[in-house]
Image (cartoon, rainbow, N blue to C red; front, side, top):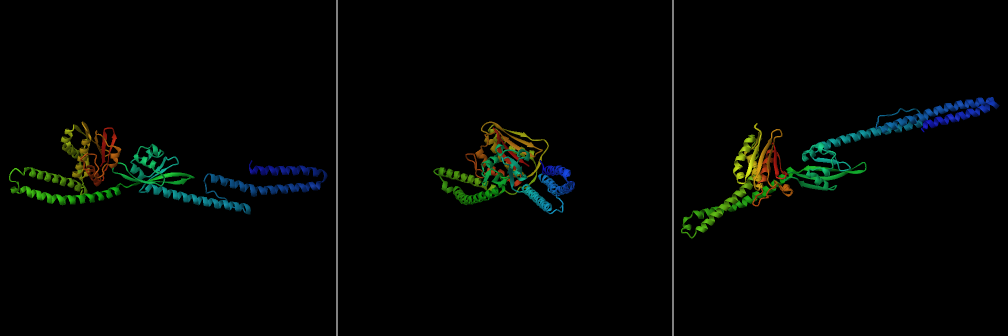
Length: 432
């Protein structure tokens, strides 16, 4: 029962009782009856006044409570002129001002935080209480290569992208650097915050690819230059001495020295091979900036196919072209890009143990080239080390073929990847 109803019932019952008692007084003493009636009238007037001073302001403040429930902090009341009620109204109005100010401050901070997350150069993934993705900023979407609809609301343990396996294994406060495909490297940092009394996690995803590649190139460049310097300083004088000896006829008179002469020739040939070996490494370090010119992609790929046709035929590998008839023009350094495609095609052919195929397919709308081979594929362990200098799965490999491909693609600013997508289906993809 409401306070207003209780008050009205109390006042009505009290005055009815007084009127009944006054009736008995009327029988015995009419003067006292008149006095009693006057008292009842005064009491009724006082009750009405008290109702206006106490119950109505309380009713008004209850309307304010409803406004607070509805989060409408703009409702305020005017003073009534009654001291006690006005004190209560002033406290209420002051509270509403504070709530409105605090809500404005919270909204401004939330808006600033949203903008900060959205424009952050670091990828940010925010999880809810159940480790479902609640929010992903554009930088994280770019790094993951996924759209927001495919991520929001999903459990990180159920997502197929390999980076979420690393995120799941991280504990709050831990940091890890992961290399996903031999090219892209990311720094993952997992932390948490308290929301409504519960812990929620967020992940900061920083792309370290450019920094790591630059540091890596600086290190292996220094090593290669030092090796080339030492090898050339040795090979040059040694070859010069041996050539002088070979040209001195009086040293080789008779047949007793033919074996020595043949051995010197073998040593000179081996030195020449070593010199060529070091030159290949030096070319990797000295790769010039791309001299970009308009290049017709079909013509470039056709040249590569013709060049590799003999090697492919020797292994029973078929080279297939699935290119649009309409010429596709790209801006590239033709010599560098041709060398990259030669390296990729050579590796694809060598990955096929017996018969198979290497296909070249172009998506004109997406400006995407896909070179697919039916070879043995790339294992997860090899995937992490692809494009790493000096890493090779071949017995006599130098580990510079894919590194040169990487440098040429980065030199052009092309996005690319190399991975096994299915059994006997390895794809090299490049976006122009």
